[in-house]
Length: 368
Image (spheres, rainbow, N blue to C red):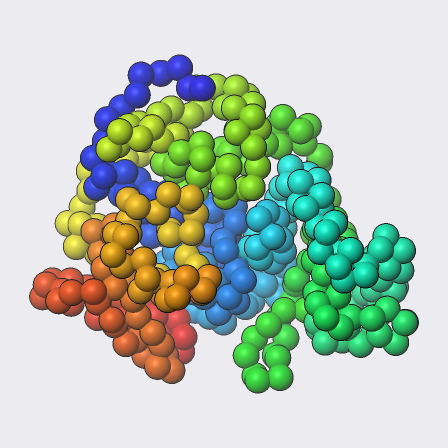
């Protein structure tokens, strides 16, 4: 564990550091690809929400800019951890999978058995899709399913999804260029990871888990050990190993009786620049599934229990877009075309209403 003396911080200070780490407040990133590198992974099971999560942390990227980075391979989408789709930098996905793959694949056996999927099915599916994609080609999800069906590999009953997931989890496939789905909304096509993201030098196991923790804290900190373990679906032992490797690169702070890990760089940046008036008054329109909420196991610092049902109605796993003011969730919002319909939990002050309108205009510019 970090050896330095723990610093005390108010909840407001804790949340400000998180917003600085995530480029929600403070300096923004120049483009969506830089956001992906900064946060390491941005939750992306809801494609549209994930695109806005990337753009809002830039100096003014539009949806077209995000799609351009995806088309160019500057951002890719896969399942690096938790069985959840994330937008990630292409140069980082392999070492992330080296940390998470064994545990993730080990947890798939029972479901694969229920679906009647065996090792031979995955091997055959891999051969078929590799032959189809080699040479820089891509396939939509529908095309991949049709290809496997024509080769005698059944894809019904979630088998097709599990074929794609397993082949991505084991480093063969990833989601790359943007295509238009049947309803006209942008989606992504499958490509070979080896062609879309040439392999960097491999990291040793302890180096990889240490890199995972350092990059998580750089883009999400301050956070607890349990937050990191939940985020990666890793182990406490792995987190302790990472802390041993990182040494005094990481320090601690205490807020409301909880100890948080924070990089020294972020702690120093927060201390060197007191919160500005624009940060204190800022209101943000974050998408559903945003890392500011879902990047942590413990969400109590930003969300009151009484409002949890409004964020995830019926506890159905679908997170609503959120309004954040003063670092805390004060409402939800929905889209009406490219317009914003705010749904605050309580009346907002005139200052916050003005800031909300400014955030709504930023979203409208993004959506075009």
